[in-house]
Length: 341
Image 1 (cartoon, rainbow, N blue to C red):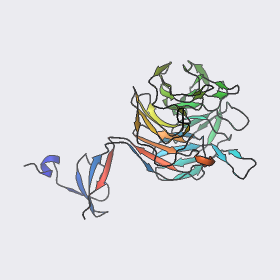
Image 2: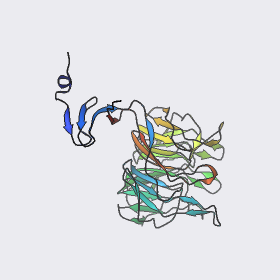
Image 3: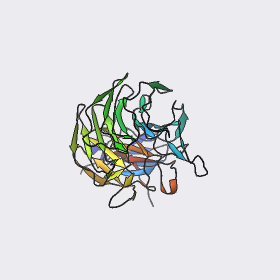
Image 4: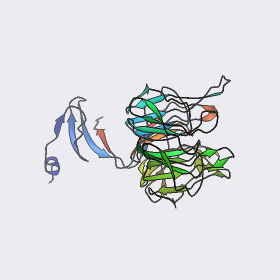
């Protein structure tokens, strides 16, 4: 007969707190909590509530990972107006539990592209109420500095990048209305035009790095889109569509092989905000567990397909969201407590 010691090579361990070195199925006694705990893995992805932003807003830029993220700029509705809206310079930093206000952008705006980490990020383009801008700013972990502008000013674009030295900017809106297919590459000093998207659009979602990214959904003058394109570092290739047409979704993903989109504005045939989540596996999209809160669009996102966050956004009646939701994907290790009744 197999025993616990024979199975795992050790007796049940006594540990003060969570035993981070545990393997799947391993049991230990948490002397701090006074309970037996064991390591399991999730069988399906799910969202859980995180800490609230200090300032509710939509159209923020996002950068970083689930436990170390930035929420940048954005747009706030002012119901008592005029003015009835305000573009913001606010930057907030997330530590996995709560948001802290840090140094502001130099130029207030929303609908910008972004990429990077909590300590090395880039924000570019967007709108400050006076039309699209080409302004780019670099974050060094403490403050923002203006760097060289995009070649083409646009708003409602998206970006991807590992840090503030390497990124791409793609899609966007210019007056007309024109749905841009333009892609620009950032080398840490200047922007260069590279190969265009196959489908020009604005209000799209995107994730990845400068050499491996996904552009998905969005809108052009004919309506909302389901189109997905994969970036190889040289060119865009059309791949499988999402299960919905929509714009204004949040997104998270490390490269073009795995990522998430969540929330946004869906339609047609449905024409409403949505809390749906879809997972990209490098080949196709699958529907996953919905966001737990109200359906928001133009929320920001950060992280990976396995561990993402959604924050901010706009809900019904111009409600500015302060909430954060944290995604844990299938197969992630979790600690469970044994209870008796």
